[in-house]
Image (cartoon, rainbow, N blue to C red):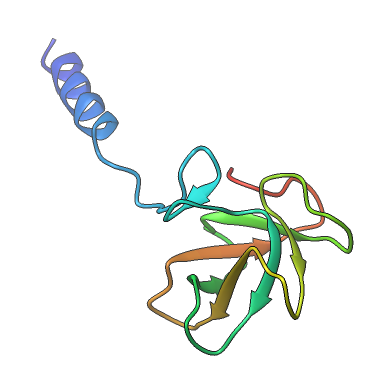
Length: 105
């Protein structure tokens, strides 16, 4: 009986721990949608992004035409929807480039 009670306490505590990812279930961060036209900048970015191979916050698929889905990014030089700066630390979130199934996973 003590094991069941301990399990329930741990489970309930875990359920109320906030997610560490800043990306919301509606595919936004800081109120900005995370699909669309993206420009890479050196300063004054909307997001600081670190590219990783595993344990990412978000999957990104590069597209050449209009991005319609969460995680589809078209890299552009102007008329962007948001800007990013690639960093090695102190990121807003981490991404992994994928060929399929972009978005939150």
